[in-house]
Amino acid sequence: MQEFLDLTLGGISAGAVYAALGLALVIIYRATRVVNFAQPALALISTYLAYSVTKATGSYWLGFAVAIGAGAVLGVATERLLIRPLRHRSELSSIIVTLGLLLVLQAVAGMIWSNEPLAFPYAFDFVGRFSANDLFVVLVVLVIAALVLVVFKYTPLGLRMRAAAFAPDVARTLGVRVGLMLTVGWGLAAAVGSLAGLLATPPFLFPNVLDGVFVYALTAAVLGGLDNPLGTIVGGFVLGVGLSYVSGYLGPEMVTIAALAILVVVLIVRPSGLFGRAKVRRV
Image (cartoon, rainbow, N blue to C red):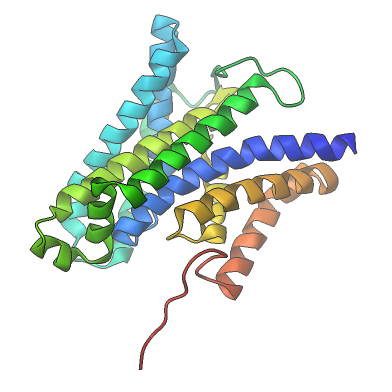
Protein backbone atom coordinates (compact mmCIF):
# COMPACT_ATOMS: atom_id res chain seq x y z
CA MET A 1 0.00 0.00 0.00
CA GLN A 2 2.85 2.34 0.84
CA GLU A 3 4.48 1.71 -2.54
CA PHE A 4 1.18 2.41 -4.28
CA LEU A 5 0.85 5.73 -2.43
CA ASP A 6 4.44 6.71 -3.24
CA LEU A 7 3.96 5.90 -6.92
CA THR A 8 0.70 7.86 -7.02
CA LEU A 9 2.23 10.98 -5.47
CA GLY A 10 5.27 10.78 -7.73
CA GLY A 11 3.00 10.35 -10.73
CA ILE A 12 0.98 13.43 -9.82
CA SER A 13 4.14 15.56 -9.75
CA ALA A 14 5.40 14.17 -13.07
CA GLY A 15 1.93 14.48 -14.59
CA ALA A 16 1.86 18.18 -13.75
CA VAL A 17 4.94 18.71 -15.93
CA TYR A 18 3.44 16.69 -18.79
CA ALA A 19 0.25 18.72 -18.47
CA ALA A 20 2.12 22.04 -18.64
CA LEU A 21 4.15 21.15 -21.73
CA GLY A 22 1.08 19.55 -23.29
CA LEU A 23 -0.87 22.75 -22.66
CA ALA A 24 1.79 24.68 -24.58
CA LEU A 25 1.31 22.31 -27.52
CA VAL A 26 -2.46 22.72 -27.40
CA ILE A 27 -2.32 26.54 -27.38
CA ILE A 28 -0.37 26.54 -30.65
CA TYR A 29 -2.35 23.70 -32.20
CA ARG A 30 -5.62 25.52 -31.58
CA ALA A 31 -4.22 28.60 -33.29
CA THR A 32 -2.43 27.05 -36.28
CA ARG A 33 -3.39 23.33 -36.42
CA VAL A 34 0.34 22.61 -36.20
CA VAL A 35 2.09 20.47 -33.59
CA ASN A 36 5.11 22.50 -32.51
CA PHE A 37 7.93 19.96 -32.33
CA ALA A 38 10.34 22.79 -31.48
CA GLN A 39 8.59 23.38 -28.14
CA PRO A 40 11.10 21.37 -26.06
CA ALA A 41 14.00 23.21 -27.74
CA LEU A 42 12.47 26.62 -26.98
CA ALA A 43 12.03 25.50 -23.37
CA LEU A 44 15.59 24.14 -23.37
CA ILE A 45 17.17 27.46 -24.39
CA SER A 46 15.06 29.28 -21.79
CA THR A 47 16.18 26.83 -19.12
CA TYR A 48 19.84 27.25 -20.07
CA LEU A 49 19.38 31.02 -19.76
CA ALA A 50 17.86 30.45 -16.32
CA TYR A 51 20.90 28.34 -15.42
CA SER A 52 23.29 31.10 -16.51
CA VAL A 53 21.40 33.82 -14.63
CA THR A 54 21.10 31.69 -11.50
CA LYS A 55 24.80 30.85 -11.59
CA ALA A 56 25.78 34.49 -12.11
CA THR A 57 23.46 36.03 -9.50
CA GLY A 58 22.77 33.19 -7.08
CA SER A 59 19.04 33.87 -7.43
CA TYR A 60 16.91 30.96 -8.65
CA TRP A 61 13.83 33.16 -8.90
CA LEU A 62 15.54 35.73 -11.10
CA GLY A 63 16.58 32.92 -13.41
CA PHE A 64 13.00 31.61 -13.27
CA ALA A 65 11.60 34.97 -14.39
CA VAL A 66 14.21 35.37 -17.13
CA ALA A 67 13.36 31.92 -18.50
CA ILE A 68 9.64 32.66 -18.73
CA GLY A 69 10.30 35.99 -20.46
CA ALA A 70 12.88 34.46 -22.79
CA GLY A 71 10.44 31.70 -23.68
CA ALA A 72 7.81 34.25 -24.69
CA VAL A 73 10.33 36.16 -26.82
CA LEU A 74 11.53 32.97 -28.51
CA GLY A 75 7.95 31.97 -29.25
CA VAL A 76 7.15 35.33 -30.80
CA ALA A 77 10.35 35.27 -32.86
CA THR A 78 9.61 31.75 -34.09
CA GLU A 79 6.14 32.72 -35.26
CA ARG A 80 7.26 35.96 -36.88
CA LEU A 81 10.41 34.71 -38.61
CA LEU A 82 9.68 31.07 -39.42
CA ILE A 83 5.99 30.24 -39.22
CA ARG A 84 4.33 33.37 -40.63
CA PRO A 85 6.15 33.18 -44.00
CA LEU A 86 4.63 29.69 -44.39
CA ARG A 87 1.04 30.70 -43.64
CA HIS A 88 -0.08 30.08 -47.23
CA ARG A 89 1.64 26.70 -47.43
CA SER A 90 0.61 23.32 -46.06
CA GLU A 91 0.71 22.52 -42.36
CA LEU A 92 3.38 19.92 -43.15
CA SER A 93 5.77 22.74 -44.09
CA SER A 94 5.39 24.30 -40.65
CA ILE A 95 5.86 20.93 -38.94
CA ILE A 96 9.09 20.32 -40.88
CA VAL A 97 10.35 23.79 -39.90
CA THR A 98 9.66 23.13 -36.20
CA LEU A 99 11.51 19.80 -36.43
CA GLY A 100 14.47 21.57 -38.01
CA LEU A 101 14.39 24.26 -35.34
CA LEU A 102 14.41 21.56 -32.66
CA LEU A 103 17.65 20.09 -34.01
CA VAL A 104 19.28 23.49 -34.55
CA LEU A 105 18.52 24.82 -31.06
CA GLN A 106 19.69 21.61 -29.39
CA ALA A 107 22.95 21.84 -31.33
CA VAL A 108 23.32 25.52 -30.41
CA ALA A 109 22.74 24.72 -26.74
CA GLY A 110 25.46 22.09 -26.88
CA MET A 111 27.92 24.50 -28.50
CA ILE A 112 27.25 27.32 -26.03
CA TRP A 113 26.83 25.44 -22.76
CA SER A 114 28.45 22.07 -23.69
CA ASN A 115 26.84 18.66 -23.94
CA GLU A 116 27.89 17.69 -20.42
CA PRO A 117 25.18 17.49 -17.73
CA LEU A 118 25.04 20.65 -15.61
CA ALA A 119 23.67 20.68 -12.07
CA PHE A 120 20.34 22.50 -12.09
CA PRO A 121 18.65 23.36 -8.78
CA TYR A 122 15.17 22.49 -7.60
CA ALA A 123 12.94 25.36 -6.53
CA PHE A 124 12.66 23.85 -3.04
CA ASP A 125 14.24 21.01 -1.09
CA PHE A 126 13.48 17.62 -2.58
CA VAL A 127 12.92 15.72 0.66
CA GLY A 128 10.16 13.36 1.67
CA ARG A 129 7.48 11.30 -0.02
CA PHE A 130 5.76 14.37 -1.51
CA SER A 131 8.29 17.16 -1.12
CA ALA A 132 7.86 20.92 -1.06
CA ASN A 133 9.21 20.93 -4.60
CA ASP A 134 6.56 18.42 -5.73
CA LEU A 135 3.85 20.56 -4.15
CA PHE A 136 5.28 23.65 -5.85
CA VAL A 137 5.26 21.93 -9.25
CA VAL A 138 1.64 20.81 -8.94
CA LEU A 139 0.36 24.14 -7.60
CA VAL A 140 2.18 26.23 -10.22
CA VAL A 141 0.86 24.10 -13.07
CA LEU A 142 -2.70 24.19 -11.73
CA VAL A 143 -2.57 27.98 -11.31
CA ILE A 144 -1.12 28.54 -14.79
CA ALA A 145 -3.63 26.14 -16.33
CA ALA A 146 -6.50 27.93 -14.59
CA LEU A 147 -5.25 31.32 -15.79
CA VAL A 148 -4.92 30.10 -19.38
CA LEU A 149 -8.42 28.62 -19.32
CA VAL A 150 -9.87 31.83 -17.87
CA VAL A 151 -8.06 33.96 -20.46
CA PHE A 152 -9.29 31.82 -23.34
CA LYS A 153 -12.88 31.54 -22.15
CA TYR A 154 -13.74 34.77 -20.37
CA THR A 155 -11.54 37.64 -21.60
CA PRO A 156 -11.72 39.76 -24.78
CA LEU A 157 -8.16 38.68 -25.61
CA GLY A 158 -9.15 35.04 -25.38
CA LEU A 159 -12.21 35.65 -27.54
CA ARG A 160 -10.07 37.33 -30.20
CA MET A 161 -7.51 34.52 -30.09
CA ARG A 162 -10.23 31.89 -30.50
CA ALA A 163 -11.81 33.83 -33.35
CA ALA A 164 -8.44 34.21 -35.08
CA ALA A 165 -7.82 30.48 -34.75
CA PHE A 166 -11.20 29.08 -35.79
CA ALA A 167 -12.63 31.75 -38.13
CA PRO A 168 -9.82 34.06 -39.27
CA ASP A 169 -11.71 35.53 -42.22
CA VAL A 170 -14.72 36.42 -40.09
CA ALA A 171 -12.42 37.75 -37.37
CA ARG A 172 -10.73 40.09 -39.84
CA THR A 173 -14.07 41.54 -40.92
CA LEU A 174 -14.78 42.27 -37.25
CA GLY A 175 -11.51 44.15 -36.83
CA VAL A 176 -9.48 41.44 -35.12
CA ARG A 177 -5.77 41.57 -35.93
CA VAL A 178 -5.42 37.89 -36.72
CA GLY A 179 -1.65 37.96 -37.20
CA LEU A 180 -1.13 39.65 -33.85
CA MET A 181 -3.37 37.11 -32.10
CA LEU A 182 -1.38 34.23 -33.56
CA THR A 183 1.85 35.86 -32.40
CA VAL A 184 0.43 36.29 -28.90
CA GLY A 185 -0.57 32.63 -28.92
CA TRP A 186 2.95 31.51 -29.81
CA GLY A 187 4.45 33.75 -27.13
CA LEU A 188 2.03 32.48 -24.49
CA ALA A 189 2.61 28.85 -25.46
CA ALA A 190 6.39 29.20 -25.40
CA ALA A 191 6.24 30.87 -21.97
CA VAL A 192 4.14 28.00 -20.59
CA GLY A 193 6.50 25.52 -22.25
CA SER A 194 9.49 27.23 -20.64
CA LEU A 195 7.81 26.90 -17.28
CA ALA A 196 7.44 23.17 -17.93
CA GLY A 197 11.12 22.99 -18.87
CA LEU A 198 12.16 24.63 -15.61
CA LEU A 199 10.04 22.18 -13.63
CA ALA A 200 11.15 19.09 -15.56
CA THR A 201 14.90 19.71 -15.81
CA PRO A 202 16.29 19.24 -12.26
CA PRO A 203 18.65 17.83 -11.19
CA PHE A 204 20.68 17.86 -14.43
CA LEU A 205 20.51 20.02 -17.55
CA PHE A 206 21.79 18.82 -20.94
CA PRO A 207 20.67 19.37 -24.57
CA ASN A 208 18.37 16.33 -24.79
CA VAL A 209 16.93 16.53 -21.29
CA LEU A 210 13.39 17.40 -22.44
CA ASP A 211 13.07 14.89 -25.29
CA GLY A 212 11.42 12.22 -23.16
CA VAL A 213 9.22 14.75 -21.41
CA PHE A 214 8.05 16.01 -24.80
CA VAL A 215 6.97 12.50 -25.84
CA TYR A 216 4.92 12.19 -22.65
CA ALA A 217 3.50 15.71 -23.06
CA LEU A 218 2.47 14.98 -26.64
CA THR A 219 0.86 11.75 -25.46
CA ALA A 220 -1.02 13.69 -22.77
CA ALA A 221 -2.21 16.24 -25.33
CA VAL A 222 -3.40 13.54 -27.73
CA LEU A 223 -5.01 11.64 -24.87
CA GLY A 224 -6.96 14.67 -23.69
CA GLY A 225 -7.56 16.15 -27.13
CA LEU A 226 -5.23 18.48 -29.02
CA ASP A 227 -7.97 21.10 -29.19
CA ASN A 228 -8.97 20.79 -25.52
CA PRO A 229 -6.79 22.55 -22.90
CA LEU A 230 -8.71 21.12 -19.94
CA GLY A 231 -8.59 17.64 -21.44
CA THR A 232 -4.83 17.97 -21.84
CA ILE A 233 -4.42 18.90 -18.18
CA VAL A 234 -6.44 15.86 -17.15
CA GLY A 235 -4.54 13.72 -19.65
CA GLY A 236 -1.22 14.87 -18.22
CA PHE A 237 -2.09 13.88 -14.67
CA VAL A 238 -3.65 10.57 -15.74
CA LEU A 239 -0.61 9.73 -17.85
CA GLY A 240 1.81 10.75 -15.11
CA VAL A 241 0.16 8.49 -12.54
CA GLY A 242 -0.22 5.64 -15.03
CA LEU A 243 3.42 5.74 -16.12
CA SER A 244 4.49 5.92 -12.49
CA TYR A 245 2.67 2.64 -11.88
CA VAL A 246 4.29 1.13 -14.97
CA SER A 247 7.74 2.19 -13.74
CA GLY A 248 7.12 0.89 -10.24
CA TYR A 249 5.52 -2.45 -11.06
CA LEU A 250 6.92 -3.34 -14.51
CA GLY A 251 10.24 -1.48 -14.53
CA PRO A 252 11.52 1.93 -15.74
CA GLU A 253 12.47 0.47 -19.12
CA MET A 254 8.77 -0.05 -19.89
CA VAL A 255 7.73 3.59 -19.40
CA THR A 256 8.53 4.91 -22.88
CA ILE A 257 7.04 1.81 -24.50
CA ALA A 258 3.85 2.26 -22.49
CA ALA A 259 3.59 5.95 -23.43
CA LEU A 260 4.05 5.23 -27.13
CA ALA A 261 1.54 2.37 -26.94
CA ILE A 262 -1.03 4.71 -25.38
CA LEU A 263 -0.33 7.31 -28.09
CA VAL A 264 -0.82 4.79 -30.90
CA VAL A 265 -3.98 3.29 -29.39
CA VAL A 266 -5.61 6.69 -28.87
CA LEU A 267 -4.73 7.80 -32.41
CA ILE A 268 -6.31 4.62 -33.80
CA VAL A 269 -9.38 4.37 -31.56
CA ARG A 270 -10.20 8.03 -30.94
CA PRO A 271 -7.98 10.45 -32.89
CA SER A 272 -9.75 13.48 -31.40
CA GLY A 273 -8.75 12.38 -27.87
CA LEU A 274 -10.89 11.41 -24.91
CA PHE A 275 -12.14 14.97 -24.46
CA GLY A 276 -11.74 16.31 -27.99
CA ARG A 277 -14.53 16.93 -30.43
CA ALA A 278 -14.69 14.55 -33.34
CA LYS A 279 -15.02 16.27 -36.71
CA VAL A 280 -18.31 15.68 -38.48
CA ARG A 281 -18.51 15.97 -42.26
CA ARG A 282 -21.90 17.01 -43.59
CA VAL A 283 -23.01 15.47 -46.87
